[in-house]
Image 1 (spheres, helix red, strand yellow):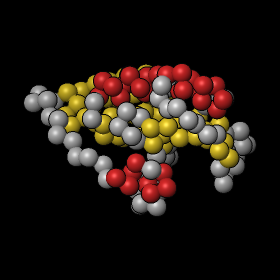
Image 2: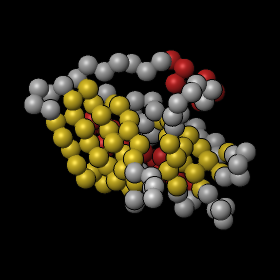
Image 3: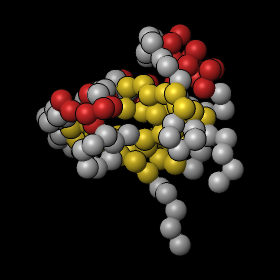
Image 4: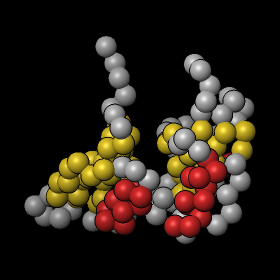
Amino acid sequence: MFSFHHVALSVTNLDKSIEFYLELGFKKILQWNSDDNSLSIAHLKLKESILELFCFAKPVPAPESMKKLETDLPVIGIRHFGIQVDSLKKAKNFIVEKGYAEKIEINKGKTGIDYFFIKDPDGILVELVQDEREL
């Protein structure tokens, strides 16, 4: 009856964000712009999931607490989203080579998956996971 459809993010530069997520394997499937240029929306797809990007002409900055995982996680609401990879080591090398992050530490999560975090062009936390559990 239910299946996951999308996650929405608000970004400051739509082109820059699209470029970043295309590098992570997403494909742009739709873009809409309001007549008065106050809002643009893009849909990017990765396998069966959609990432919806909103870009407002007059964005409101995110609170400072969102800039660090340790201060962001305790706040109620969506905190980040995860992208599955086949190899965290390869993903780490790719991210460093692209200049999206410098120091990356692969961690073992409390739930049994290996992961690391990066930030998109707006500082939004993105978790890359290698989940080999048979759930």
